[in-house]
Length: 94
Image 1 (cartoon, rainbow, N blue to C red):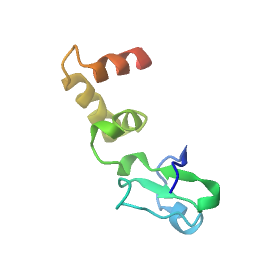
Image 2: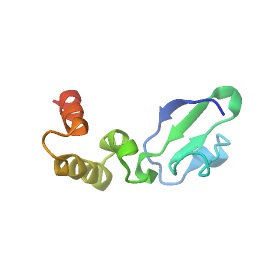
Image 3: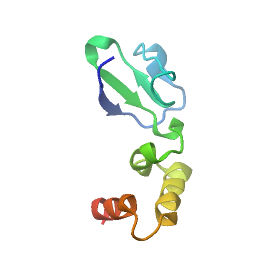
Image 4: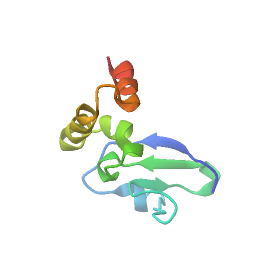
């Protein structure tokens, strides 16, 4: 599967993206929290609160809200001051 374009939807009370949009997960090749639409759309829905707590998802989780965002902020502030990831994040946010 080619790299998809990404879209964002805030977390709904019920996940209609699975049924209504025909979205499906592919945890064998991608991480949890990504739901792909039909291949013709080359699009994935990112459900931020379902993303794993990994360095690769850190910036996306900063866009979350509540506990998800707070955990991401704590991960950033726990990095060493001279960390490239921390410095990059600081440049983008500040």
